[in-house]
Amino acid sequence: MKKLIFTLAALITLTSLGFAQQIPLSSTYSYNKFLINPALAGAYKRPQLYLVHRNQWTAMPGNPTTSAVTIESALKSDKIGIGATIYNDALGVTNTVGAKFAYSYKLKLAEFSNLYFGVGMGVNRLGIQFEDINVLSPDDPSIYTFGAMNKMTVDGVGGANFSWKKLNVGFSIPNLVNTKAKFHKNDSLISSSSYFSYARHIAFLTNYEFNLTADGKHALTPSVLWKRDLVKKASNPLPGNIDNKRPMQFDINVMYDYMKTYFVGVAYRTEYGVITQIGAKLFDQFTVGYAYDFHTNTNWKGSNLVGQTHEFILGYQFGKDKDDLLKRVNKLDTALQDNIKKTDDIDSTVKDTKKKIEKMNNDLRKRDDDNFQNLKKELDKTNGDIDELRKKINQNGGNYSLTRIFFKTDKSELLPGSVSELNDLAEVMTKYPNMSIKVTGHADSRNGETYNQKLSERRAKAVYDYLVSKGVSADRLEYEGMGSKLPIGDNTTDAGQQLNRRVQFKVTKF
View 1 (cartoon, rainbow, N blue to C red):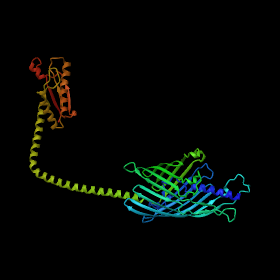
View 2 (view 1 turned 180 degrees about the horizontal axis):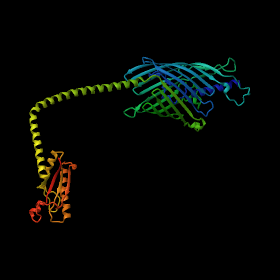
View 3 (view 1 turned 180 degrees about the vertical axis):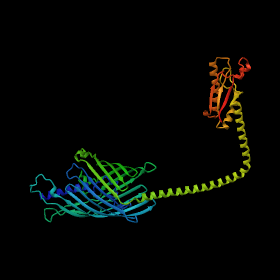
View 4 (view 1 turned 60 degrees about the vertical axis):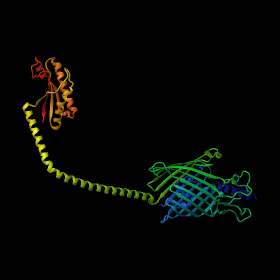
């Protein structure tokens, strides 16, 4: 009887551990939602292969470790998806190896709305390594010893998912078949009612992607995952019995991505802790991700009792993203249509311009006959003016006196009456752009020579500045003061002094 009691106690302990984590935990399901919902098989059209490995509570003996391989794809019609999962889940002295095959169907509700249904069936092999159980007194005759036991069970899962634009809402029911793995000997020492049962669970997952920028390069995707088991309550629950509390768990997750290439996320899992994630999608086909769990459950009195939890995911998507290629093709087609329209507009503009040019040419031809004689007359007159100006330059040695230039006594400021003659000079220089002159200032002999020199130079500079202000280039002008060195009149008379106070210019180039 003692042997029976021990064996039953061991199985009860294993059963309680199994209910605590019969559904393997995952922190990277954001990358591969097919892992938790068969309805999403082929939802992303491209065939996808993912490898996941989770090492949980590394400081605990017999800590949970899970490895899984998933592959899924849509068929040619995109309405049907198929997928498969192979996994190995170890916990304590138990080890479960299983394989599931999933089938999904997509029902299109509207342009951006779809409803997916999925079912999956598979088999599990549950093994218990009784020889790995550590006992303090292995020679105790009350301990019934036997080796490893393996049992096969059938497993099933169902689910559904609704999508609208960037919103997804779905649920799944793992362990839908709920078969039992019976462990007992054909003898009277172990009860035939000793078994391990897989409990049904239910999980709801919803997420929505928000674009943070208009170009869609920055996005934020919050999600919520809710899980609980569907075990019936005991008919006579014991006070304080945790198995009668129907535990549930929430994951509140936020994932940021840049250009659908680089990912950073953080999540909070109730009664567990905080989860951080980082990942990248390389060359539009390879996905790598890592998650680290920070344990905050106060019942563990510090994460040093359980150790760290690491999870790795590696994925490969076959082929190219059809939607992305279609977007690129549409973008190129739009650009091509824009270029065609612009080309048509340019052709139309060219034709209109040609018509206008032809009309202008016809008008010019009509006017040419009338204007040619007028233009010839103006040209002849201009040539005559140039010849006359050259004669005057040759006759006067190139020197001209500005007779209507007036200054205040002993001042170099031009009086208003001086501008008329200077404007005429500026007009002549504008008309003949190759013409250059040198402005010379002169004074009478009433003051000293030094004073007269500076005064005559300032007066020449005043004429120079005025011509520059009227648009004559400075590199066509020179100025110089001669003082009273070159009188043209008698400095002993008022009339002679008036003649000597003068400004002249000389044509230096024509």
